[in-house]
Length: 240
Image (cartoon, rainbow, N blue to C red; front, side, top):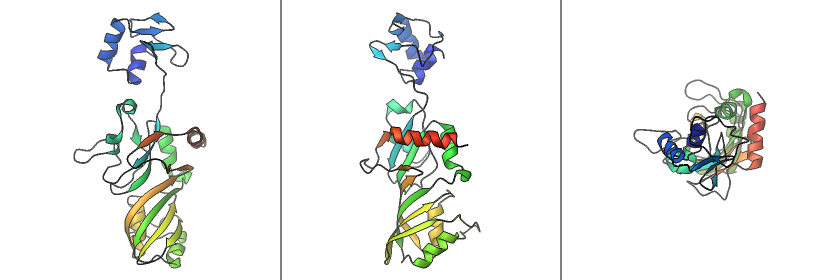
């Protein structure tokens, strides 16, 4: 990899800023000053420094975000704020994107990465990756609803959903439930409850595969995935 590309990819600066750092002899490779940004380096072996700071190369970023309501699961939008607006500059240079979609008014677990292979594998219908949601429902959720969801319900466009696991936490005029599905149709949870005459009034994603929303992660905040979570991601990628 070219030295200037490695430095700009790691957020050291723009190409122009990196060129200035090189010209001013602020960059060393294996403890020797390098002024030529076109120099090819082994990003995994060579020791690259800017001043006294070692620049460790990292190709991908993997983040867990506790998504708040009011933000779109997109990288940019002309009218609304997106989940990318919640990120700081130290991760923005990786150009992460949301894995899948949570509705604007939905909260909870959202993975952000620049690893397109992982995103594809997590979202592939063939993988049957489970997604668990907590929901408050207007209307009394019944055992009949759990059986209907287990069999698959026909939503408004005629599509019959895959079997889903519905657990009733509280059954009343306003019920609380946990729902686990293995697909991600547009507004699917809301449409499934509408199919049985109920309305979702609050929705929060708790889990995606073996990655569970960190209870210590405040809403609107994010953190890198843990080693255990990264191991799961690698397993998903390898199980093609």
